[in-house]
Length: 92
Image 1 (spheres, rainbow, N blue to C red):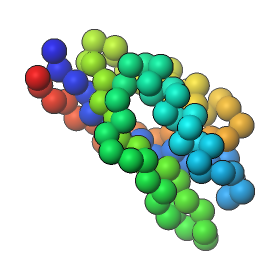
Image 2: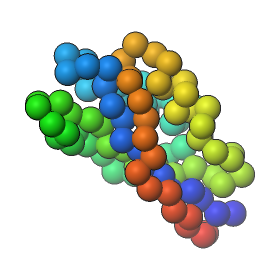
Image 3: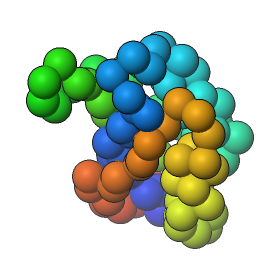
Image 4: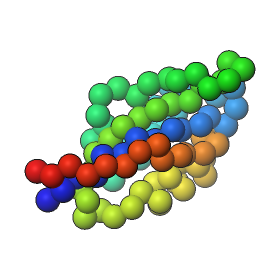
């Protein structure tokens, strides 16, 4: 069975949003999808002091797309948007 490896750019609602709270929420949603986070979530600078959370994770290809997860995260108070930076496929 193949695994999908995906990287997200998770944008906070504003510059005052606690990125640690975002990391907790992202981890909860990914693990609820039976996904596994690869490495650590990182805080990346964007502009004017604003940072975003970058996360890479893997999940079973049979699960389908992550559209529902992205929508679930974006509908809360902490996260403005979720952007897919990369998608790959790993066999084995």
